[in-house]
Length: 316
Image (tube, rainbow, N blue to C red; front, side, top):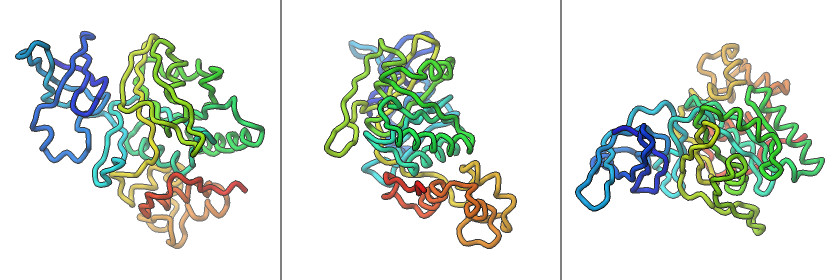
């Protein structure tokens, strides 16, 4: 039988068949020892083949094949730095939910997510959430960030899960697609999903005032069927977003504004650091490229994992 993984809880997977029937499934043993370096060999969104094991009182499936993924979002596992975690697979559209505060989302974090989605060919739209809660100065900041990322080529939408501002626009983009909503804990992912599809009633929690970070309410990724012919994958909040599987020479190719200029660099393998006649550095000096983008590029290039929660761009 064939189906799509809708939920993963570590050792059990909820799979929906092409006929719309749900089965609880386990992995065939040898999957675990085939040298897969991810903490989760099967992820939500995977297309799998499974057999029904009816030896016991309850029917359950055994997954014996994972079909080739179209794409996936990956990150370094929080506690096991040498391992990676696939957050979701076979995604049509990724929404990155950003908040200025409560909790703050740094440009370094945004850029890391965008680089990963560029690398795996996933279209990403940036949603600036909680737009109803910002003062004038903060709204200017949102306008600056919107301009920055739109200029590069990313769609940005200011939304409010609370007041439902622009949610119709988001829903229209989601139709006939599998979408993933991602961002820090506390940015309002579950609240947003509930506003889009109230019948889901996902758990939400308030921000912890002590350190302005969200409390995790989603512990495992899960896919949901929506009433307007769309699927959504709700992911656990991500505190940090370490880069994986991207070579230094490839990195600038995932910064669209760098990639456009690369052919004008003197050296074809220019890393845009100290090389002479570098078109990217010239554009940076002429303020045609944002310093925050260049700084996040250097941080990823240098493998700086500990700095990506800080805001790095110069507001002047």
